Each structure stands twice: as structure tokens, then as C-alpha cells.
Length: 146
Image (cartoon, rainbow, N blue to C red):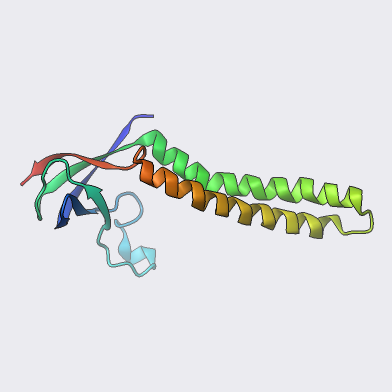
């Protein structure tokens, strides 16, 4: 996948990092009256490295890897669902085979939820390492308007 570009406004400078407010796009942020979520309508704020020496009020272009975003979304949403379904199906079958008197649906549910919890512990450990690696981290590429 290609690169994803966003535009943001530098709100705060903290040493060699900046807080950048990025306007929401798509369905979020455009129709606040119909949303009913009670958000303020402002953008989201992210903290990024400042390789271009941006100052407060600068409008900057931010770049992120499109494939990285898809990978993060799959790890966050798709893989837990797969883990839970696999745990339910195979855990229930295994326990029913080992203990024929047990309810396969109930044991499948227990295995599925256990697999889901285990996945989130693994995601928490691996996710922290991925976040610190900087591989999929968005970065400021240039200043659009000063």
C-alpha cells in the first residue's frame, strides 16, 4: 500500500517533539449534529518527532505508511475475532472429546474468551515493542504554511 498523508496544526512544542492536531475526516467530524457522540468537533492530537523544526501554529504535512495502518487494524480487530472463533470451535470439540459429559457450547465459549484474553495480553506486549520501533509511526514530512 502507498503512503497516507494528513494535514495538521502544531499546537505545542515540547523539546524535539510537537503536539499536532489533525482534523478528522470522513464520517467523523463532518456531521457532528447527526453523530450524537457528544464530541467537540475538534481534531485528534498526536505527539510526533519534529524533524522540520515546526513552531506553534505551523500547518504541517504528516505521512504514514498505508500498509502499517491496515496491519494495525487487522491486529486490533480481525485477529481477535479469529482467535475467539477458533478457540470456541476447537476448544469445544477438544473438551467434548476428552470429557463427553461436558457441554461443548459452554466449554467452547470458555476457550474462545480465554483465547481472546490471551490475544490481548500478547497484543499489549508486542504492541508496545512495535510502537517503540517507529516503523509504522506517522512522521512530519514538511511545513505547508508558517
